[in-house]
Length: 305
Ligand code: DON
Image: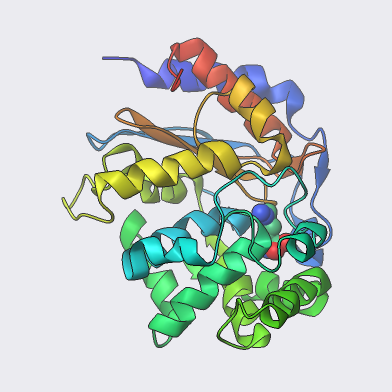
């Protein structure tokens, strides 16, 4: 069996020159208040072990990592019908780009760009009463931690400044690809993005992705093995913005990043790992977080390739 703790410790030590390099996302004003010098890492294995370094127990804003959880829930609710309203190709443009949406007549390229997540949120809103809370409870159940909360200051900050998201949701509505009002969709979407979780929480919550869709602790089936394969494929091809090719080249794992500086990555059959460091590189992925994941796959010799 691989000795993870010395590897994690080495990664944390070697990544330290990268911490604080890059820029904290400031377009959501509340995110700009975070200390840029954090670094945390947590790796969980399906046999119930967790290995940590640095600030692995400090909650951070998961932002677009929430798109993995909402897509999982939407797939549970409507299965393949999701793909009637959404593509599954990398976008090759920014996560908040409007241009492609106009050209492709309101069908977002994939569920991990903002417009795609709006459609996913719309699906959940149409199926569940009290959808915002149901998503929170779903995520709490995945990581077995009832103290996961919405950070209301972050949600309100984005509600007050998220003009591109408002434009996008209205655009989707004009193409007939939202059934609920843009305001209702965005209220839920901003709250999902604001979930505050630690690296340990996020890594635990994604263990089902490396365990054929089953939560190892309880044995509960979250999604089928076939859907798990698809979620991982989407993370590999669409999970890290328009630098997804470079990320696969460097790291070699399905992953999803968020502008809060978190990245979740999984190696099916082996582990889920979450890194967090708030400063982002030019593509919007955590700079130190990406470097840490690259070091992890190099040092362990384990990746999907
Ligand atoms: O909608 C936004 O811009 C943020 N709440 C989330 C952005 C993010 O993390 C990257 N998106 N794919």
